Length: 213
Ligand code: B1M
Image 1: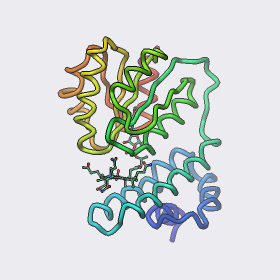
Image 2 (image 1 turned 60 degrees about the vertical axis):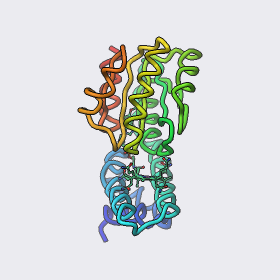
Image 3 (image 1 turned 45 degrees about the vertical axis):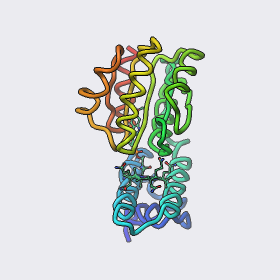
Image 4 (image 1 turned 180 degrees about the vertical axis):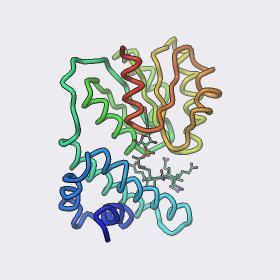
């Protein structure tokens, strides 16, 4: 197998044996984010496909998630960082009912490395918890992540609840079940502030930078 195929295979098979040496080899060729968005994501997409076809069970997908997390943790110290002054505070949450957090945590790393202070509220975060946390820490932006189809609808509800609570900080949304169209036609009309869709974590950084300027 090529290096790239081996990296994808660690994720698909949920095994860490040999992972670190291969990540180190990959670092000679690629930037950390290219490794994550390339071979590791290829592996995760395959996991999603196999899971969908009932060829993997939840416990196995969890192992894959562990490998992905370990790989991201290994690569994190090598990611590009800007020494820029604090650009603002971003509050991050995976919405109510959803436990998927690898994408959200990638957003945390990338924004954190690029001058943002992050408040990560974790997973299955209810609108009430977000409202409470906003009142306490007054973030400049709110980032919502969700991968389940029902999470897209949950973002609509969350936006409505935030609006009712008088919050209008810009919201960034991302995650596999979302599209720009859904964001523009279903979530944004429910909110007074801006609602912007980020297809991946780097694009999320671009949007945050535009908002911060
Ligand atoms: Co779940 N799962 N899962 N799962 N899982 C999906 C999402 C699914 C598509 C798999 C499938 O069936 N093909 C499917 C959803 C189907 C649907 O709703 N239509 C699914 C399902 C069904 C489920 C369960 C219901 C299974 C069950 O229990 N029967 C269950 C749900 C539990 C719950 O949430 N209540 C479940 C559980 C799990 C695990 C716990 C086993 C595990 C998650 C572990 C964890 O996160 N700690 C898991 C995993 C790993 C996946 C897949 C395979 C991979 C997700 C992932 O981590 N990708 C996933 C299939 C897939 O996505 N291909 C699947 C890597 C990650 C880096 O990408 O999170 O998309 P992602 O983030 C991207 C972008 O989306 C974006 O940036 C990142 C890239 O840079 N992004 C943002 C994300 N958030 C952002 C926020 C932003 C900006 C960008 O700004 C704020």
